[in-house]
Length: 96
Image 1 (tube, rainbow, N blue to C red):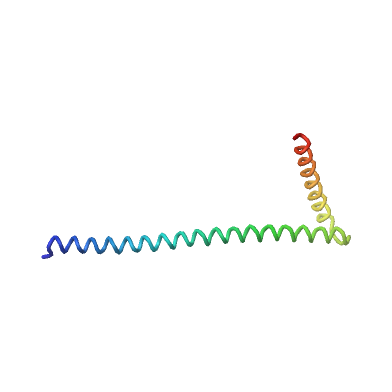
Image 2: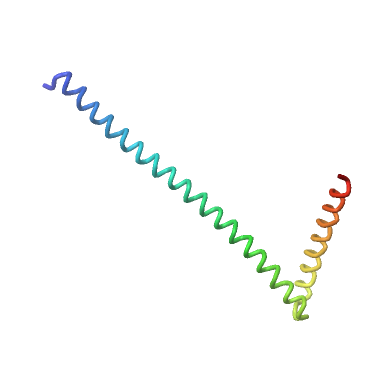
Protein backbone atom coordinates (compact mmCIF):
# COMPACT_ATOMS: atom_id res chain seq x y z
CA UNK A 1 0.00 0.00 0.00
CA UNK A 2 1.27 3.45 -0.88
CA UNK A 3 2.17 5.86 1.78
CA UNK A 4 0.54 9.24 1.98
CA UNK A 5 3.80 10.88 0.92
CA UNK A 6 3.87 8.78 -2.26
CA UNK A 7 0.27 9.69 -3.06
CA UNK A 8 0.96 13.39 -2.49
CA UNK A 9 4.06 13.17 -4.67
CA UNK A 10 2.09 11.51 -7.49
CA UNK A 11 -0.71 14.06 -7.25
CA UNK A 12 1.88 16.83 -7.29
CA UNK A 13 3.56 15.36 -10.39
CA UNK A 14 0.22 15.09 -12.16
CA UNK A 15 -0.65 18.64 -11.18
CA UNK A 16 2.68 19.90 -12.54
CA UNK A 17 2.07 18.03 -15.79
CA UNK A 18 -1.42 19.54 -16.07
CA UNK A 19 -0.03 23.02 -15.46
CA UNK A 20 2.55 22.52 -18.22
CA UNK A 21 -0.13 21.31 -20.63
CA UNK A 22 -2.36 24.24 -19.66
CA UNK A 23 0.44 26.74 -20.32
CA UNK A 24 1.19 25.09 -23.65
CA UNK A 25 -2.47 25.14 -24.70
CA UNK A 26 -2.78 28.74 -23.60
CA UNK A 27 0.21 29.77 -25.76
CA UNK A 28 -1.21 27.84 -28.69
CA UNK A 29 -4.60 29.50 -28.19
CA UNK A 30 -3.02 32.97 -28.19
CA UNK A 31 -1.08 32.13 -31.36
CA UNK A 32 -4.25 30.88 -33.05
CA UNK A 33 -6.11 34.04 -32.04
CA UNK A 34 -3.33 36.16 -33.53
CA UNK A 35 -3.36 34.07 -36.71
CA UNK A 36 -7.14 34.43 -36.96
CA UNK A 37 -6.92 38.20 -36.55
CA UNK A 38 -4.24 38.38 -39.24
CA UNK A 39 -6.40 36.30 -41.59
CA UNK A 40 -9.40 38.56 -40.95
CA UNK A 41 -7.30 41.60 -41.81
CA UNK A 42 -6.10 39.92 -45.00
CA UNK A 43 -9.70 39.04 -45.86
CA UNK A 44 -10.82 42.65 -45.30
CA UNK A 45 -8.03 43.94 -47.54
CA UNK A 46 -8.93 41.39 -50.20
CA UNK A 47 -12.59 42.42 -50.07
CA UNK A 48 -11.62 46.08 -50.49
CA UNK A 49 -9.40 45.21 -53.47
CA UNK A 50 -12.17 43.13 -55.01
CA UNK A 51 -14.67 45.97 -54.64
CA UNK A 52 -12.21 48.43 -56.18
CA UNK A 53 -11.56 46.09 -59.10
CA UNK A 54 -15.29 45.60 -59.64
CA UNK A 55 -15.74 49.37 -59.70
CA UNK A 56 -12.92 49.70 -62.21
CA UNK A 57 -14.49 47.03 -64.40
CA UNK A 58 -17.82 48.87 -64.30
CA UNK A 59 -16.10 52.14 -65.24
CA UNK A 60 -14.26 50.52 -68.14
CA UNK A 61 -17.47 48.90 -69.38
CA UNK A 62 -19.39 52.16 -69.08
CA UNK A 63 -16.71 54.17 -70.85
CA UNK A 64 -16.34 51.67 -73.67
CA UNK A 65 -20.07 51.67 -74.35
CA UNK A 66 -20.17 47.87 -74.26
CA UNK A 67 -22.16 47.52 -71.05
CA UNK A 68 -25.66 46.15 -70.94
CA UNK A 69 -28.65 48.00 -69.53
CA UNK A 70 -28.37 46.40 -66.08
CA UNK A 71 -24.72 47.42 -65.81
CA UNK A 72 -25.55 50.96 -66.84
CA UNK A 73 -28.25 51.20 -64.17
CA UNK A 74 -25.91 49.79 -61.52
CA UNK A 75 -23.24 52.27 -62.55
CA UNK A 76 -25.72 55.16 -62.37
CA UNK A 77 -26.85 54.02 -58.92
CA UNK A 78 -23.25 53.91 -57.74
CA UNK A 79 -22.53 57.38 -59.14
CA UNK A 80 -25.69 58.76 -57.53
CA UNK A 81 -24.67 57.18 -54.22
CA UNK A 82 -21.25 58.85 -54.42
CA UNK A 83 -22.86 62.19 -55.26
CA UNK A 84 -25.17 61.92 -52.23
CA UNK A 85 -22.18 61.05 -50.02
CA UNK A 86 -20.24 64.05 -51.36
CA UNK A 87 -23.26 66.33 -50.79
CA UNK A 88 -23.60 65.02 -47.25
CA UNK A 89 -19.90 65.64 -46.55
CA UNK A 90 -20.16 69.16 -47.97
CA UNK A 91 -23.19 69.85 -45.77
CA UNK A 92 -21.33 68.60 -42.68
CA UNK A 93 -18.27 70.70 -43.51
CA UNK A 94 -20.46 73.73 -44.21
CA UNK A 95 -22.18 73.51 -40.83
CA UNK A 96 -18.86 73.66 -38.95
